[in-house]
Amino acid sequence: MLLISFSIFTIAQTTTGTLSGIVSAPDGVIPGATVVIKDNQTGRERTVTTSDAGSFAVSQLDFGTYTVSINASGYKKFVTKDVKVDVGRESSLTITMEVGGV
Image (cartoon, rainbow, N blue to C red):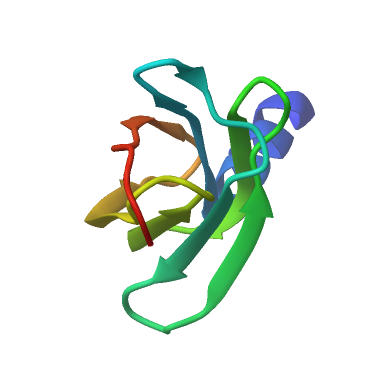
């Protein structure tokens, strides 16, 4: 009985989710891209850089909607709005950047 109560309490305490993704271009993944994740309600931002495999992950995001902006040298800026982050879940993006200037 104690175990069940503890599990319910733990689930009730979780109010965040995770956003992850892969950033690529027609010629392969893009390491070192700057990913900015902005909470549409609060305006708070988190900034990360993609790994050598072109991936990123940001945990502990409050549930809600976010705007994701990605910049990489030699590619056009990518922006997507209203990316949903749910409580206790991992949302995933697969982004293909376009070759071009700033």
